[in-house]
Image 1 (cartoon, one colour):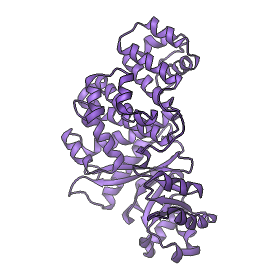
Image 2: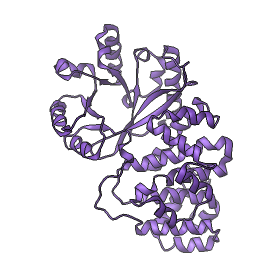
Image 3: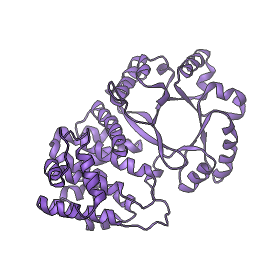
Image 4: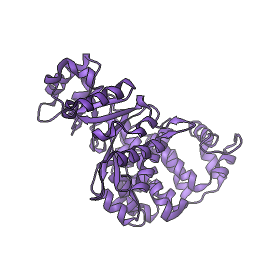
Length: 403
């Protein structure tokens, strides 16, 4: 099934706008896709292989993974490859009317696997609900979402977690959050919300932009070092990064000049791009930053086979910059006046065109449940398996950046 099916993700936010989990839905890319136990087990096995590591365990840190499920999945052996405390299967409530399915659900819950019920009649289930599910999806629709949220919040004295959907605007999210409901937010997190915080570059970002310009102009290491020496926090972050296990320098580095020489200009530019986003103080939701990191890394991984590592680094920058206007709270045109980017990166940012644009567009499609996933993958000659592996790998990598 992973040969014909694409994974798409949707973030789950807690009331503080933090990402507490992701739902992975199976987006079929062809008429041959099916839902047999064997095909579903193959797909679950692919997910497990990318987010569970033999040495490091669960790579998504504290995140929950919600998997869109069908009854055939409930007995899949591959489920045992996923940590039960981080795994939630999403099922339609009506399916639990089948005694065999209910018995399978009870067995999974006894083993620690979470169950999310969709389309549940809460009044009918009543006191039976905690015995059937660990989460229930509640529908927020119409004009009076706040009243609906209050009704659902009354059920929160039970052990069942309440998850709102759909949440189409920030006012509705705030109404749900005020009553303690989590929410799947779809594309909402990409929508700017009103903020009283100052927009534009803060002092830390101004220094980072200066360094990025110097790197693009091939300034020598001594000039870069001189700027870094005036920013103790930035110098500390560079030395911490160069000495991290992820970079693998092989020896302790204590000199800024040595760190810059070891890192090299292209990786330095990439690292500064990450810092520029993480230094944002515009008040946007943390999910926006995580989305930018996942998008950049996913676009990079998708581009590597065809473009090579060097150019894929540029695709990463395009992915990160594609959300920088929202992170900084300023228009993209203004972002582009503050930093010099290659023509290919600019084309990708403004119109998803050029050499890098299609990879950025595909990374975006994986966030939005769009039908474009299959067509863009075909255009780029990338199989569902390659896209899914890159997607899950990027999701895991993003957790290391947020650490």
